[in-house]
Length: 176
Image (cartoon, rainbow, N blue to C red; front, side, top):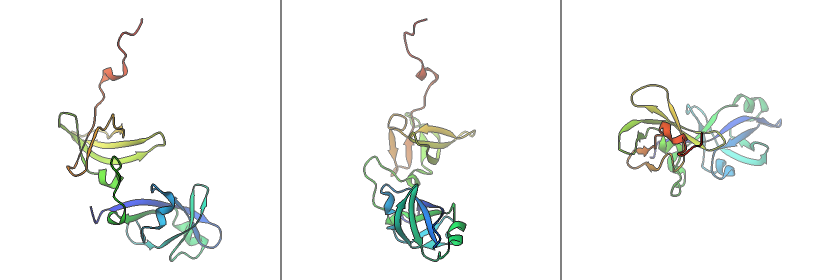
């Protein structure tokens, strides 16, 4: 997957008066966000060497190369920081980089094409897989759990989704 990029963090504002920025890390080890080499903005127009200076509420304070003032750091608020996928460690079994999932075919248990993965979201209660249906319509969100997504085959370019039926929420033998 060399050449693809992974978002490892975002600049959430300025910290202090000497040009440090607040960084929100998206890496498994949050402090590692500064250890993957230069980070790029999403549009690739900016590159930053990142030196984490200390942990703060909601992330880390960091020095970014080329950023000298509080105003420069504040102007970068909202900038997502990317690194080449090739510099990241291989994920453990049953772990995936979101970037590796985007674009995979979504199939049901019988192999029928349902759509393509559009995104993976973190809403706090667990990850959700969003896919665009093959037949059009609104995107679909499914819990990114082993039960709902029993097969993730990045090498084969697909995920299998257990599509809930209307009966899944009903219990047999309910009393009236």
